[in-house]
Length: 154
Image 1 (cartoon, rainbow, N blue to C red):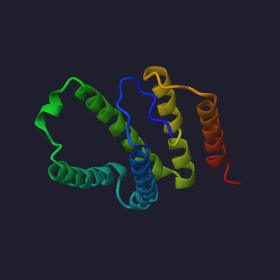
Image 2: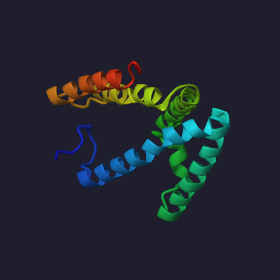
Image 3: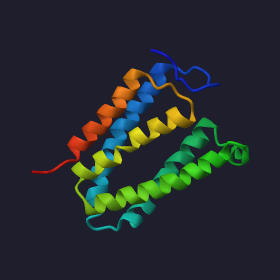
C-alpha cells in the first residue's frame, strides 16, 4: 500500500493509520445514536458542553501520559490551522447535534457523511493530493450511496 500523496510529508506506517481510522470509525459510529437519545431530554448545546468536558479531560490525560503537550505548539506558525479548524469543528458539531435532535439518525448521519466528499475534494484541490480515476469513482459512489441511504423512508 502506498503512503500518502501529500507533498513534503514523511512516509507513515500504513497499518498504524489504518488501525487508528478503524478505531475512529467504530467509536464515532456510536456518537450519533447516543446523541440522538440524549437530545430527547437534554438540549443539544448542553449535551455538547458536557461531552466536550469529557473530551478535554481525556485529551489532557493523553497529553500528560505521552508528554506531547508542549506549550510552544500553541503559538507555532501552523497552530492557526488548528484554531480555524476548531472553529469549523465547533460549528459542524453544534449543527450536527441539532440535526440529530430534530431528525432521524438514519437520515442525518448519511447527509453529515458528505463531509467525506467535501474533505476529499478540499484535499485534492488545496493540498495537491492525487485525483486518480479510482479515487474520483469513489467520491462519485459516496455521493450516490449517501443519496440513496438518506433518501425517502417509504
